[in-house]
Image 1 (cartoon, protein in one colour):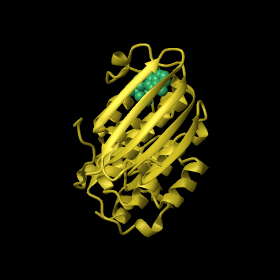
Image 2 (cartoon, rainbow over the protein chains, first blue to last red):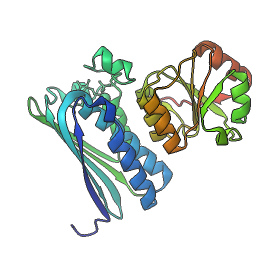
Image 3 (cartoon, rainbow over the protein chains, first blue to last red):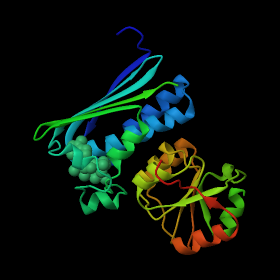
Image 4 (cartoon, rainbow over the protein chains, first blue to last red):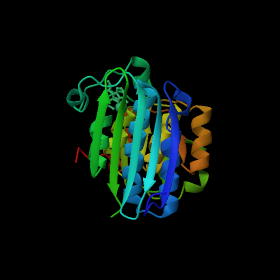
Length: 143
Length: 118
Ligand SMILES: Nc1ncnc2c1ncn2[C@@H]1O[C@H](COP(=O)(O)OP(=O)(O)O)[C@@H](O)[C@H]1O
Ligand SMILES: [Mg+2]
């Protein structure tokens, strides 16, 4: 384990597995709550993780989530294999979505996920290789 | 206002979470879009929704919604109920339409549990 890492866990997400969608974020929320983070911080991390998890389920084939907690910050890294994103600037715009009617029926696909992930993060990075996959780095300061 | 009063106003049944009937609520938000709840709901609000899948409960749990009321006589899916029990989240079902449910609660002085974009 790296220096100062209080907690590390890797989770996997299957694309199109709508019945388990959200289970990783629910677990991340319990872990952060258990560690004893401020509820406001736990909520922000859980919201960002959930929107990001839904994106992997909806748009990618599979992905991993790495939760790393240090005394100063919570870092949630998502790396997926899938179609990737051609135009990240466009994808980051509020209201832009390629979701299908089925995804909208589940309550997602309003094009608000990525902007809301960014809003809940202290540091947010997204990179993508079209045709290969997408990486998100979400960091939330511990205080 | 206590959840039990809200239940009466909405002619609602408790699906799970009887022990929360004494909980106090001041705010209500209504949405079928879970991304809206995740972006705009204030912690501790009541959520009125027509979305009955498990995502409604996960969203409520993640966003720290205090109780979910399903409108128009809809019942949540089995896995939604199961998760709500696990997470200790009260679920109610009301026969009213979204419009009528919101209107009644608004009239009784409940406030908006939805903030605009920060
Ligand atoms: N992990 C991902 N892989 C491929 N495309 C993605 C991924 N995440 C987001 N996208 C693309 O970016 C768009 C915007 O995402 P988001 O803001 O979460 O809104 P929504 O999911 O509601 O469409 C999606 O519609 C999709 O086209
Ligand atoms: Mg999304």
